[in-house]
Length: 310
Length: 257
Image 1: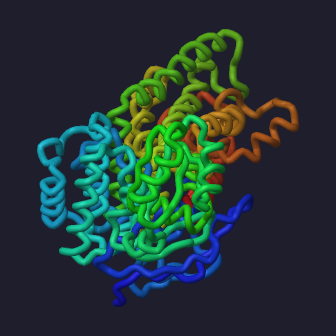
Image 2: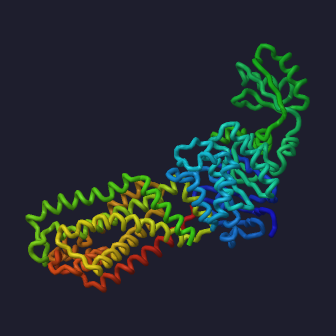
Image 3: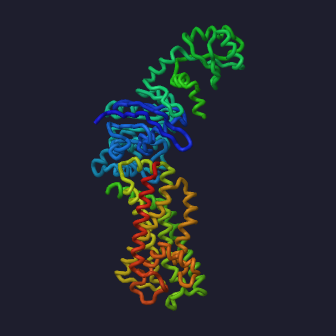
């Protein structure tokens, strides 16, 4: 059995719009792959195709060597799926939900019982196993949800926006856990996210914009391509200041919610110069290393945050 | 087998934990029966029925079928809810063929409906029905068949639906008329031609007929007149079950998310 996920020239169109346009990438077992993109970029469509909910209409995909178009039944056996919307039954207890899921995958008796105990322990919900899911907090439900998806020991784990609804600690915990899981169990982890922080923790990232894969690589690699530093300048009159900066320094700026944004080499020196040149107009200056949002901006010409709102 | 039993089991547990559903599915038809049955008894003698039974006895089998219909419908509404809440997706990506999913759901609905129907069957002696072993077993069997067919009819619709509002509309426009025109409310004897034909093409007319025959198998005075014959009605009812099940499976298989 091959140990990777291969997507080649995948396209998908809904009657009213094009969702995916010639997307190709590969992910290996033991690797965490993050598909980053603003809402409406086609992430969920790609997720649904990989999780066997939507059939392939154009292009191809193989998971561990099996063809997604023709061997869905086999693929479903080793696929663990975590959807964005909770897939638990609130009227059932945690343990009942897990048992139900185990039965769907043909697990029963002692094997199932043991597996459930292991996972409840691992996700720290053992003491609440007999409580109904509807009374649990969102964070706890999420943990049960992920425990459920691992019950049948999947070799490929697909997660759609797994950290949505989690606080920052729980998010960190989950990302750490996925890392351990991928390494110790050699599981292939594929997740979609619109959160830059989540994407940063992945081994490799694909950036999706309007159905096209615009970047593919390790987060550091991608950020290195942007080069230099990113500077944000706050001003009372950003428009005028933007024009003045172009005239004075020959650097183009973009107006964002956080103020004027520009990229340059040796940002700390530039910050000093710009403050010296416009002492009255500037309220604050901060600079930092590029993030994946900057990669997105460089490749698409759009701000990641704006796309998100659109 | 395991996937079928686990999906079936979940339907039962859910129903048990939402007991208001149980209440509404049985009390509403019961009130219907008592009010309409008593109210019309004085002025309405079903065509061809033996004297002394009255309308309340005629209406009884129809009310049992209404309870089956309501319970089946409530069970199928859970499919719509499962989709909306995301639970169904988890089942759809599991390695379980759609025919097994639908069968489990249908059996879940059937079990619940049968349970409610049996409660109502306890009232049968009050209107002069005498049960022998055969008539009792037969009546239960027919109830199970009807519940299975009606649940599948509900599933056939529910698998296409995104909202329960839509399902309620279908229920009022399709399911209730099917019940009204099945001979549950009035016999087809003497009604205008177009209505008689509608009733003739209604599969539930035959379900109700075979149920009436089974209930009164061991009772001499029958509370109904001319209804379609036994074996033919049973055949149509079985066919109805098979077609609705195949239809529901087909719909579920065509559904992608």
